[in-house]
Length: 378
Image (cartoon, rainbow, N blue to C red; front, side, top):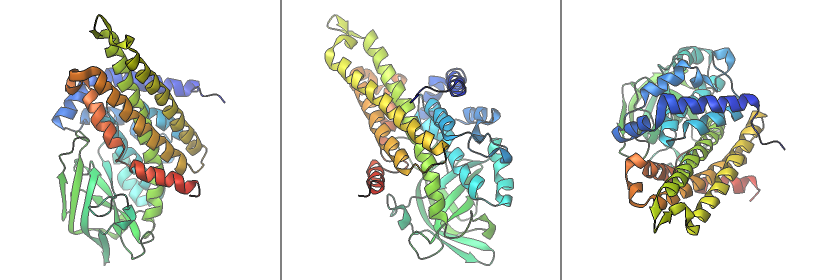
């Protein structure tokens, strides 16, 4: 089995790496993390290059890249921050709900604006009483004439507050736990929608929010696909989301480890570089092994999706393992850098914060293990 990138894939990887170094860079990401401001300038650069349309069919103006090319994209743009990557990716994988399940009118209304950077998307699933048990959501959408009337409370919806954002909101339209859920498009400036940004330790520049819906009305035509099919659609959505997240964990773990190696080579204690101490050498060797193993899991899952195969277990394995690896790389970096690790200009504290969130965001590690076990027949 050949694990090398093709020439096209390697060129894509190199193009993105150069872009991240020359057009984005560490300092830009540090500034936006500290200020909690969305990286709009960088986002527009992605739009100008057409990269927002990676997952959008060519017939709709997108690039229709396969899952491997998408995984490469996610790995590289997460080089310095998982939050920065999420700021770009969230709209991208959420747009697939419209691209693959939306009506002709919805595609015409939203996809061109998304591709040129004017429209963003957010996905809203979780609620205060429905986190890991996502199907336990209570937010209701009741049909009144030709409008849906929405009432409820959603939480941890990343990017819902940003100007021009359309929320793909999961709401209950029937009594069946799974079959009574629908996905409805809710522009964030809809009357009756109150969005509040949360002061979280991560998602600083993208932002995560709580949403209160009080008799908010949207047209009946804003439902994506069929009523009651939301749980099916979000299952497809989560396969791509979890692949993208796993790829970002690998990309950021790589940087956390590389930064640690570089620091330990330059920093001297007791008359020799830190990198010469066996305890640190062995830790870094273990992390090197794990980063490479996590990367193989990511591209194995991506290859399955690229072939059109179901990869639910594969993306869950990649996500849970890559999240653990990212955390261990950042944790060891914190130990190696000592007091300097506490300073934002050394980046490690950001890697550490964001890696901890990786074990929760996009489906907790515990849920991923349950999915894997279920796929094993357990």
